[in-house]
Amino acid sequence: DAKTTQPPSMDCAEGRAANLPCNHSTISGNEYVYWYRQIHSQGPQYIIHGLKNNETNEMASLIITEDRKSSTLILPHATLRDTAVYYCIVRVVGAGNMLTFGGGTRLMVKP
Amino acid sequence: GAGVSQSPRYKVAKRGQDVALRCDPISGHVSLFWYQQALGQGPEFLTYFQNEAQLDKSGLPSDRFFAERPEGSVSTLKIQRTQQEDSAVYLCASSLEQGRGNEQFFGPGTRLTVL
Image (cartoon, rainbow over the protein chains, first blue to last red):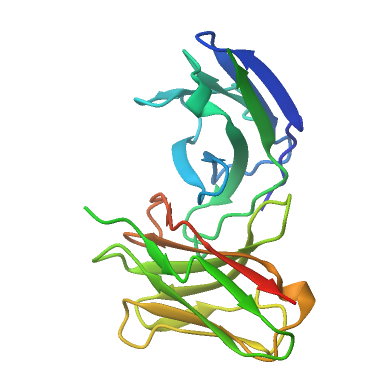
């Protein structure tokens, strides 16, 4: 699977939008972009995924560039409970479905 | 609705002991995964089951690691003759169906400390 590059850490003010970038310049045409997050002492939690169109759900929005080489996860109104490590993963559906986690971005939401 | 549960949540073992870690996936989930997460790092894939069949065990670090899911629901990860480098959080995840891009639901993990 293609690898991803994320900044190791980011800060965000409570109530503001958190924009987490991810580069996946070698992504293949059949690979999806997934985002998970891991709050301290918990297992990872699925947030959202997409192929090429922008996606939105109750947790977040996912913006994928037209060339699919990068994406941004947007938490529209960050709260203190959004403090976590956010993982961007690219994944071929059907290849055993394993997730290949990188280092992720540690997001700190500050009051 | 119950999520994925794992037991024990914490396990301390002396070097050389055998340990068994249990995972109860979400009822009806076909796929089950085990991951290992070292301190400060992202989870790493260990093995994958589709129902009772172990289809991928390429991530198991040595032959001391063994996983089973005999009836296609509960799974056990066994580590024989534990070593200090086995200290990690062991995460279990389940998903509804293979090949559909379905999300994986993770349990809280078992933190194993080998002294």
